[in-house]
Image 1 (cartoon, each protein chain N blue to C red):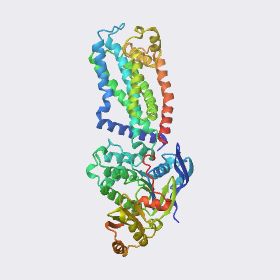
Image 2 (cartoon, chains in turn blue, green; image 1 turned 180 degrees about the vertical axis):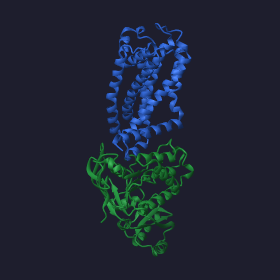
Image 3 (cartoon, helix red, strand yellow; image 1 turned 90 degrees about the horizontal axis):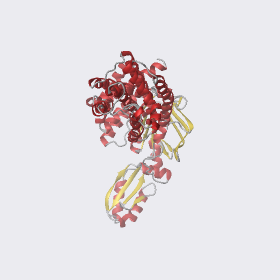
Image 4 (cartoon, each protein chain N blue to C red; image 1 turned 45 degrees about the vertical axis):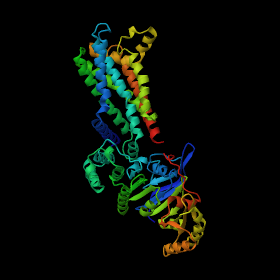
Length: 257
Length: 321
């Protein structure tokens, strides 16, 4: 077998391992099942009546925000899962085996891509039940999901970098909450940015979360990519190009100490 | 002489100010077991981590099966199996799933991996637990499974890092049997241990290491000759007798006696068994010494160190990483 097919079969082996973990401890999926459902229901039913958005029903407006917020959390959460793994002896075993060493990381990020896909499917169904109408059509919706997954995959690699540096996985939870949470709120996720103070709106309009959310919203609701799509793709690719090699490098540095 | 399957020359490795390895030399001939004996913090684990490609040495050179561990780590990994003090197993996977995963990562055919995994589970008496997650295993079961994972690809060289540390006597005995089996099968084995008895029982050759260097090397009997074989140990019923007891024992033994005042104990190395005990009792009695307890025992690691270095093995738990 060639190097690439070895890498592929080792990655499949790692994904298999991660899926067994999920099967044995289903609570590992709460962040991509229960919490997005709660967000969809809370925002659409509690705030839905109070927040007015131009042209569309609030639930339809909201969904792109919830999708991307959940994907972002799920992506960054890779850091916690990797950091947990690094604390245990298993990584030493992997490193003493003649396997493709990067498959530990690709197995991790691909599993998290599957988690993200599961989250989108659940939110999509729950959203439809409370009034989400993806009037943009099938193909643009698929494109929207593809964009979200690309963004999530890129964030997963940022997670790999963070998880390789941090010694205590518990510390990461706090950092994620302090960084990712505000970023999802200072964006177009839950309200139009025009309702924010000017200086905040300036930032919100330009940060990548808003761009991805706007592109997803435009694709799912109108079927058009809209002006945010290209910048959203560029941001995602940019994150990926930087964080993938950085993540691999930091992981190698951590594990060869 | 058969070729060296493991060879290390002048290995150095520091972690900050700690010199874990300070010019370590080792060689293990094909089909033999080398016991690497030393206290906590002597550099045993670091040596294993360098030889198994987990960390790079700062200086020096090492080969396993003739292959350089720094330049061709991937090649080395196809020829080694590693089992350690901290069983490297997946807690959530079952025993069987662990073995199958490791087997496939060694690039064994799935069918072969399954056959070998089943055979190992049988041989290591894990049959009842094969389909239970490892987190439900006892310490001894974990070690056996960990050893199984190291063996599944039947590699020619096996590294065991303190394979019985922390196990109860029963678990230790069962690991010893498995390791002795391995030795008979012709596998080359490097085993670290803190227990002289373990090295004595299993290893063909012993390297005593301290501060990251080999301080003595030889067979178990070579070392025993150096440290004076068995100990005659007595406990007197009153500290006042210690002086007299000491004189009696030194006349019988092969070296200076060792007194532990708090425990009212005197120890001396002896070369022969015959008649020593009877003579000791008779002479202690005629010297008026009241004895609580008397008997032979094997030298401890501490005593080996005391003889080799003139100081006891330091307890520096936690430095090894």
